Length: 154
Image (cartoon, rainbow, N blue to C red):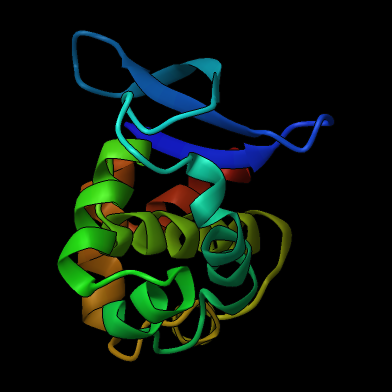
């Protein structure tokens, strides 16, 4: 499941959730998604807009080392408060969200460039090629090489 917050035209935050559709063999054959406006975090104090600056920062700096304490400070929260409210707002931990950003960027580079996979791994913030491959396979259900081949119709 992928959950991605975005700014709506009205300036309010929209959370889009995407779920892969798999056939009986477990292969991804499509994606289903839905979006919802987020005004409040599950009725709790504070709005999802509290995270707009943090999400924007994550999208710009996803390939750098980012600590949870740095992100919590940016949002003006304690680490535990930040993690709890982030998960409630986006159905994902900050680490999982960052990993999804990195895998999404890697998927685009694998599809639209001929760069070596090791280079893409580094460009997307993975300091260990093996960790990149494991993370990619866990999220995309195939290795980066197989993903590239599939995207190219091989």
